Image (cartoon, rainbow, N blue to C red; front, side, top):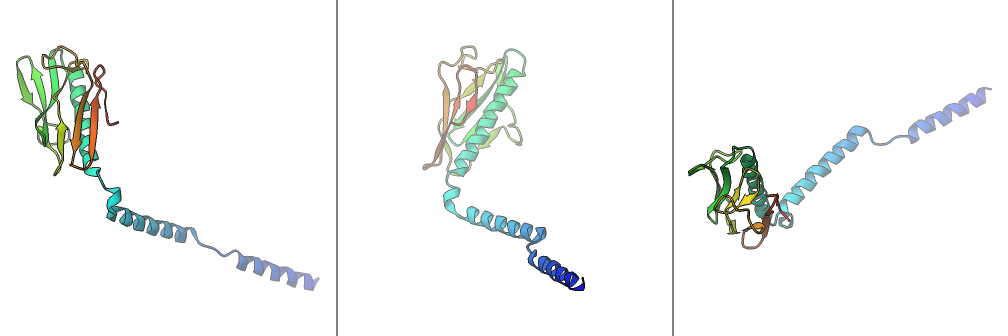
Length: 174
């Protein structure tokens, strides 16, 4: 029986040697390294960042339009909120209460005016007013808009158009 025990011991040692591999820590270290390297490569290649400033500004404007709509819907009747463009490079949030327009701070900012990033302008920029139902209204503050409103932001090469739906006020980037 002694030779059988020796043979079994040899086989168990061979099995232990053949099961070597990577530890979980080694695999995680390799994945983290690959993640860091790929992030560096993507951030340095210009093809992935083309037009991101225009898209970012369009998302900010879309958010501010939705904020103005929400403020109108939560206000007393007769109060109107609007986003207006004094010029192509900026816009302002305003509140109308019975007789006068007053500028209001934009959400998350310390100003009532948002200035677009360098070289970005609004090529079409209607004033967008909302009644207390959240419906876009015309300058008389009563008549609903007859067509969808569009606002186009451009940096000369890239552009994004925001659409405000005429009946519901739903704001989106197609």
